[in-house]
Image (cartoon, rainbow, N blue to C red; front, side, top):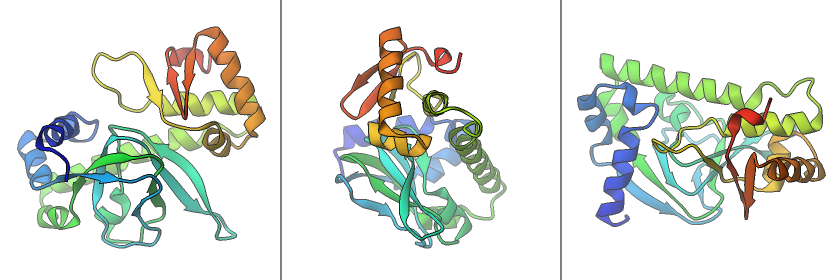
Length: 227
């Protein structure tokens, strides 16, 4: 478990997240009661594919790679969870097998809400509303990440994917959006080659739309990505 000051910061961020900020404050405190901030090493598996009864997580720092099975059973990258996003709710709230694997793609820390805590709240009207809201937010996010690519050329695919990734929650007052993703990962989730990704990022950087770093991209002007 991490130091208390950082845990307090993570709890504050969770309360202000897109999901919990929609809920009753008293209910939020009950959800977060006894939650812990946990460190994960690079490549550590957080949730396994087909794992039942998982916890839910609020990513505070780092990045989490989401991997899904293809028809040939190979596990491939789907997208990247960025800080201030929740994940793992499918298995935790439905009790069914998880349909994806989650791995820390770099040293990360996440606030963990235990499945036992969720089970204690299950059946309450407030919980049913919260679960519906969380599923709705996740579904909308997944649509943004997965749709809009059909019929687009390679370069447009990359721009569209960056636009979706840059739409995730960010700290209040911040106009920039830092996306923790490598060129290879962006190529995989955009269904293009790494060469196409490199070309698009170079163009966007020259335009002043983004700033590229080591395994990250800072979007300065999200509206320019698909203009």
